[in-house]
Length: 518
Image 1 (tube, rainbow, N blue to C red):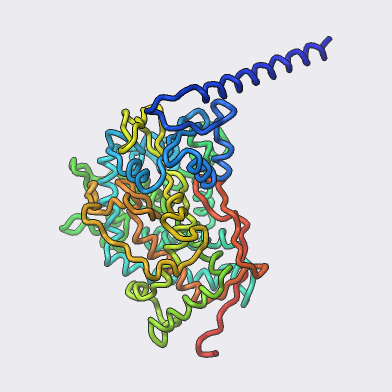
Image 2 (image 1 turned 30 degrees about the vertical axis):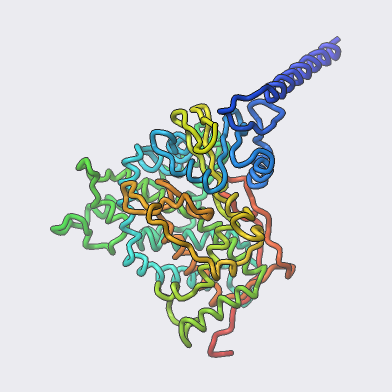
């Protein structure tokens, strides 16, 4: 009797599930309004296309584009995601007016537990623009010039002191290595010597726990009482207290000069700058916001730099001839002592192949595959009958343009030399001041490695400088190749919100002989 009851219950559940699937499929075949973009087919309601999208978003977009064109809607765990591809789609989504589209509602629930309150997406857009203006202190030409020797020193120290590089050759997990190197270089350059001293194993553990807050599930339920979220929240409090202690200590032992901003006992760094900044309202930046901005700067660009640098090393290992071209380029363009003397910012400008290696890697291996905006009111897609309503989330995917043959020949091939004769023409009408200084909107280009619009990455120049200095320093000191000698690179890991090489990616390295011994 009990078995009969169980079988009947299972049958009811099966019938109910089949009914739900039938109704969901039938609704998709009903005529749609001309104002509604095509809907990507899916069997299950709520779940929608989550599995295919989450497994490989780039190929999902590619398949949908081939069937529906540049504009379509798919269902992601109950949310309607309207994707707009191509340069026109990027322009529409990323350069939208604040009254039409909103980034805070999308990213705030995810980033606020990690970065903290009252910064980035947990504040009005006008305040965010002021915070970006404050941070530009660390992105001046003078500041960038000072960073190159600091970054080079960090990389050299790592190549001699890390357990990974104790012999004359070996094998390393390059994803893990580049994550550490980029954390150390960004910490020393952007945040100063005092913060760099704090980047110990304990601090790295806090960073890791915070980083685990960027899990896809936290887009939906960031408040969920999951173990990684409890560790995330505890790590934020501890990391914030580290910065607060630094700030309080400076206030105790330092004095303002008559200009009201320089702390005389310290090198001028980002903390001292933020301690002297004042909002337009007349309010000095609160210490808690300074601490949260410092956390944001440490983490905000680290994912992209870590991923990009790992991909560069993997590509150079798969094509050692390009690595040797980079080495020869230094010797030819920087003088007879090119590979032994300290680097300067002006040196980087004399290395066009280096620039092309970085550009090509950022084209093929974008760290962010989807950029999202909440629709605030009905908006018409220019040149179409489509009206995107507030029940949708708008999605842009610059990597689709990066990998489209209409913009780049043989797009899936990594070829730095494709940029040798590529000339980008600046558009005078494509610049704007969102409140933190004149910048390019960048939305008209098919190549957008740092995003576009008001939320374009403000640290673009630093990211390039950091990557360039790291690559030059490693190429000066190491030869690289793949473990099996092939030209293949590992697949992309999409399990996090940031696309990156699979975490077990390994390469072989061999220390170069010094110039004097060759």
